[in-house]
Length: 559
Image (cartoon, rainbow, N blue to C red; front, side, top):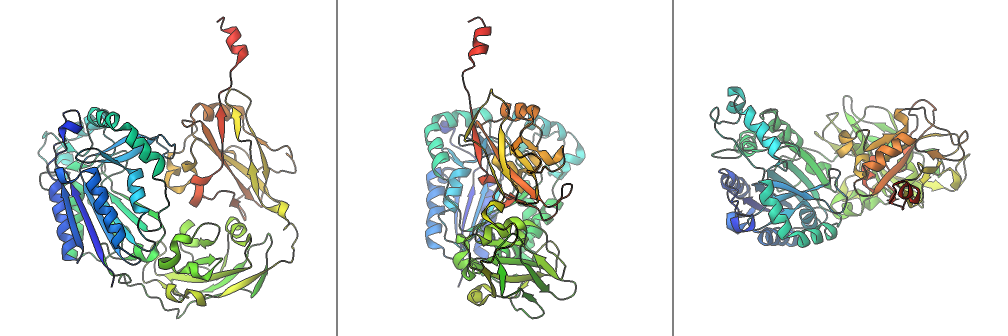
């Protein structure tokens, strides 16, 4: 039987001695922790509550770490935090905004890197549901803007506060947390550089606001927790996590929009469950294959042309396809942590559910899967919704993964299927920042066209941060010119000078990241793929910007 462990944290105050005399006074955070603790215990969780002086960084770490040791695949851990949020400088370059988010605990801040280290200690197959009623945008300008809007009767009413009453927000005082940062700087930097392990559990976070917003504190609860309780309605709510999030957002003011974020190993069954569910499989999604079918040739050439599957789902249903190099990878509980872009592909990870009678594996996924593989396994999911897992079913269940159908990859060659047809983009490991624009060597494959993208941070290649792109941190050649042909430009692709100037001047961590898209048409995205797909964009290759001494400029300066 699955089990659940809950850790509920709430701080109305922090230790003034640790924060330059600031006590961080709030009103509703301990109530938030108590209410979440009550929900957890009523549902059968083993629950621990940590408030104020109990909620030290070491104790929070210990209790969550202990839960990780006690939970196995199929179990769930609920972690809720209510209190101040803040940010510190990111020294590793893995955050697009240059900041690491923190929880402001009693004695010091707990970094998101440290939390990631805790999630990585949970076993594959464990579900983690994280609730954070805090914010990470504690700037004086945002607080002043928030206070100004509070003078509106309509706006104040949304927060349940009197007009002109001073608002309380869960953003820490910048001077206080900076003093705390300086006092613990060496320890923080050790955590930033060392807590980088991969997460094999499945993590779903619903937070009180976006990273650039503020979370409101109330007399009884934080506004986010208050609305969450209203939607939960004593357990009467019956939707999925995404539906739970949407229902909360619908009750919030426009200046505070809760965020839904998933990390770790994808787990559609977890996503479809009713929130807080301990036992798996209770979300109404079946596993039978009646009315579903997927088929492919028994053998297929391991070449440049991807395989196409014939699919069938009941009328009005939608589908997704999974392909793996090993059948056991379909068992997400036992082997989900072993999945990667080179051995497992799921159409639902990169595009909406589909309605069609066939499915062709995208070229970039096909080229990754077929490398070194002699056989590919496949299965079909169907759902009643085009965007969510509703009454879902699958042709081969996780528990019967070894019975999944497969096709053999033959070694016979096809035109253009040689090693030189594998798309690739390369660049030297370093370029002088004060030199000419860099040139990339590109190979989109025979008969194909290409586009190059360059960014100041690899995270801008992911869906999560694509909305933060601008001309100073991202460039796509496809935005300003037709697709290129290596036959017409055999010397490679040179970054335009004006783009090079903008990007190098805004490369905060001294590196630029790049990737290449390819397409079969000179004007459209046809049979396209990417050397580093969005799902793993943070792993894109890069080159360093070397700051070489400019003797000519030095001489002209007269020094």
